[in-house]
Amino acid sequence: MDISDVHARLRAFADERDWNQFHTPRNLTLALVGEVGELAELMQWRSDDDVRAFAATDAGREALADELADVFTYLVEVANSLGIDLGAAVHAKIDKNAAKYPVELSRGSNAKYTDLPGGH
Ligand SMILES: [Mg+2]
Image (cartoon, rainbow, N blue to C red; front, side):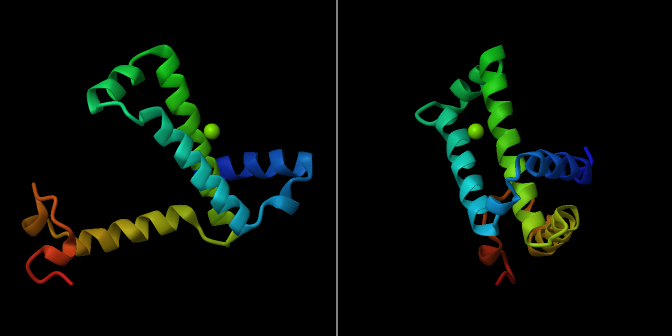
């Protein structure tokens, strides 16, 4: 998937509806949080096994896919509203995480980087 293609479709969608006036960084971030809540609601009070079973049903898979798409849509829009290249930001953050979590110290461990030897 090319994020720029997604962004182009979202921009056209908003332009056609004159919605850009509402798409401020703050509004988009709050919408993102709301969509994360909708995703979480589908998993709330269910065990991990229950969630996997839900995702294996047609209706469950569609519901989860819809909310994941909503989250991603708003994430792309927040980044764009702030002039941030989301793809570049993701790669840069993976690089930072790789430095914080060296394989030799973190493999098989769930420790936060601050708790790894030499972590800070
Ligand atoms: Mg939603």
